[in-house]
Image 1 (cartoon, one colour):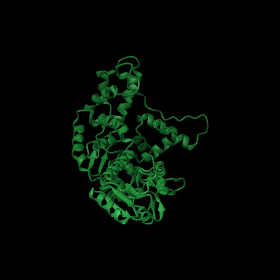
Image 2 (image 1 turned 90 degrees about the horizontal axis):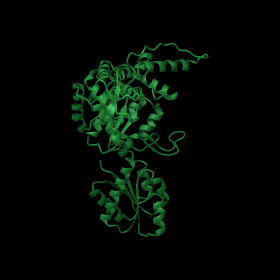
Image 3 (image 1 turned 180 degrees about the horizontal axis):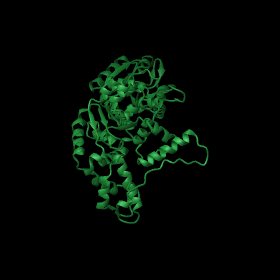
Image 4 (image 1 turned 60 degrees about the horizontal axis):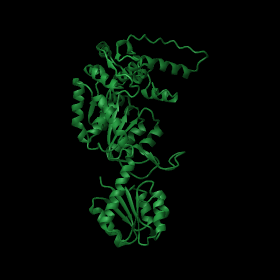
Length: 447
């Protein structure tokens, strides 16, 4: 997708020359001769770069710089250069200050640098997250089981295709890791992978986070904010637990998938969404469509290609490999090199793992702590082994409120199901999103 450039230059001949030069390099360029036309253009579009003369018949560009540079880099041109103007322009945030006449080679070099610098700013978190992301993906890909190998082959097939993917599976089965693997093996791998947890955000906040908002869009919106769609520019947007989003957001997400266009909250400009969408859910979206809580047209868009992540109980051959991986790569005390006994491996393999790989990781890390100074993890160090059933006896030293009773009950269920929030939601007959919100409200996200 070509980058948009706006040229603001009142010299008609130079304006046409600049536009032609930039178009020859493959950019989408619009030329205007003053700020009146520029403002009209900027009300409908958001260019990747602005090139402007300093003094125009209807305004001084240096006065506009502080606002302009908030949304895109600006290159300033002038025929009347002075040290004072140059310093003022650079302090106001201009990317470069060039004197006319500008040679085509010099202009192209500065334009390329400005656009590259803008991409680096958008991707400032990318490099920092890559090692962590690849390590996380590797933990899912460890093993030799047939179900795992089947998923690996499917990922290899779909990753280069750049189509929307829906990942289905139980909580803790590695859906986000599959999404990361798709991103890493795609043509978008050098750009951002942005994950959104659809369970934890309320409707208005979710819309602002996903699409961004304009200044004044709502109370407290004192400045423009770019959303996660823009943060994922050129990369992959991962929507985790997509079944939890509200109907109004479903409609707006459908528009993005169908047209590649979106608007910030409170905005009037159509923006391009150059992203690949990968979604995940532990719910039956087809059933939600039948119940009327999920849009069928969005479901059909998301399910262009479906990957089912196998639960850990269906890939038991991988458990020894995963257990040893978590022992070698835990990120706390490393005073003693640990290993795991054959009896403990048999106990791990016999367990049904309602919390899947996430639960296995937790069990191994607890076992490392419980085994203390010994270098061998044995069955008695596994926290789930022969643990007593949880008794649902709720005791308080005062007359509890309904919310206190509910919170204590959730704690007991989380203990019983090893932190598996989906199981807790199923037992309580509420949505998993409600459990997330309750835990967040009481600052219990560590469960």
